[in-house]
Amino acid sequence: MERGKVIVEKVGGKSTVTKCFSKYPLKFIIPRKVGSSETDAVWIYTITYGGGIVSGDSIACDITVGDGCTTVLTTQASTKVYKAVGSKSSEQVLEARIGSNAFLAVIPDPVTCFSTAKYSQRQVFKVVSDSSLLLVDWITSGRHERGEKWDFDLYKSTNHIFHNGDEPLFLDTILLEQGTHAGIAERMQDYQVIAMVILLGPKLKLIQNQIQEDVKKIMSQSLHMPTIGSRQYSNKHNDHCLTKPCFVASCSIFGPKGIGLVTRIAAMTTESVYNFLQHQLSSMEPLLGVKPYS
Image (cartoon, rainbow, N blue to C red; front, side, top):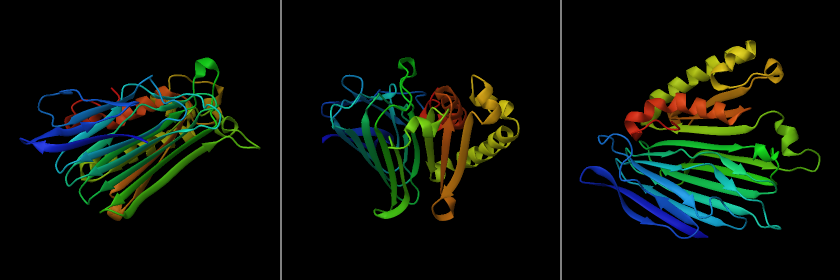
């Protein structure tokens, strides 16, 4: 497994990359500054040579966010997973440690698996009581222009959050696998995107409250008046929207004293999820320098 490693620490009162290493096919791009010069945030873009993940690739990344630091881990475009060659699968592993009063935002574009692709990813976060974490984990149904919709063989995404070393705080796995009796496309029906958004820690408490209220409003309107309720997050309205919501979301709190919130989404268009993320996370601009997904 090829590894990359980034360490962010306070240097002269600023969040600074003090160690960065990557090995083919993984590469990091770290801009000198993103957004306002007053913002104390390090942005890290992960890319792979060839523009995607090839069958058989095994990539691991270690991120350490030191005390009081802010770091953003993102991508330049969707993560493309190419078709599997024989029985070969591909995998990515992210291990992150978030220090005291530190903040890590993992805000990639969605994963897009090509036909027959086999892909798994595992993300492990280790936090302390006043760490903050934003995690967006999402997948699209595939390359629509090629007629590929949920046509890959396997997608598995595991997200674990541990408190104070080894105390489980959040354990989650999403598994999409072609079945003998029903394929993924049959089970997903008209929904083309699924997403999960996790907000954890004191820096994100106000946004947690905002998202919970907004999701209640969205779903309340959608379930009673589908074409009105989904209007903000959908570009198109068709007959399907008259019988089922174009955009479905739910929220659940987790952890001691409700320190974490997980939002799960199923949507008929990728654009609607982008719109939702842009709207809900826009207030993070002062922390990150720019609005996520802008």
